[in-house]
Image (tube, rainbow, N blue to C red):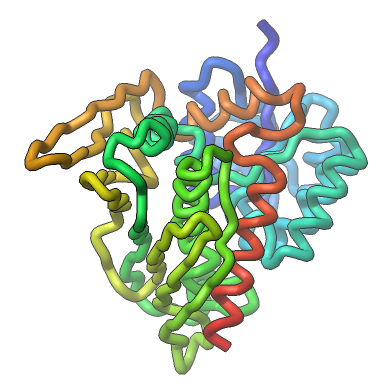
Length: 331
């Protein structure tokens, strides 16, 4: 079987994790990479051998590249995703797909117009653990789900130049990690309704905007869904939380201790804890690959459909609308 040949746009820490995942994937291989300079690309290639390009345009012109993984800072996602689509390359773009719903729609239209695959890289959505969570909700393992709490927040040292605190680079917790929480809440709401996802009918948010950074350093939102389910989501870059997901039903609850990284970068097991009627059960979910290898293989598996059944284009647009509403509540 011919492997999907990947090119990387961006050579930061997340690109390194994805490159490591490609080495363990069943379907893909790294063939090229581009960074802000050929020198930085060559440093990356010393760890992950690949053809180095001194510009993203050169990588997109490379006929050996079938698909690109975009991991630039958020404000550049739209530019390179659209250019990749126009170059006929399949696209896996880091979250958030864009800075807002309008940009995301432009990317999706470019992918459709040029008949290429496009997926927003919420790797947790591709995991066996997430599929099991959806099954438990649909099976009514804890009765009727009424409430979800999802958190993803960490405490980073303040640095005005760091993308996390730089408004011009799309800084702030909502865009960086808040999308994980809203994506999970919307996924579970969809499972309650027997759909792939459900968008909230109400979004109310509060947060702390840094006096110097002028970005949301910590924020919380309450979501209400048409089916009656409620969710509380929290995201930040200055506050360390226990990053878990709790799903509360009429007959019990489900706790996911590691919702975003599951078994991590290597093969292994993750767990879901189900409590019902005074009994506590730990469900172990095995994966024979790390999270980024699973994500890369998921792309290859659904390439012909041009979008993922787990992170569809409509799902991505709904998540961007939710993030837009959350950010607007803080202004």
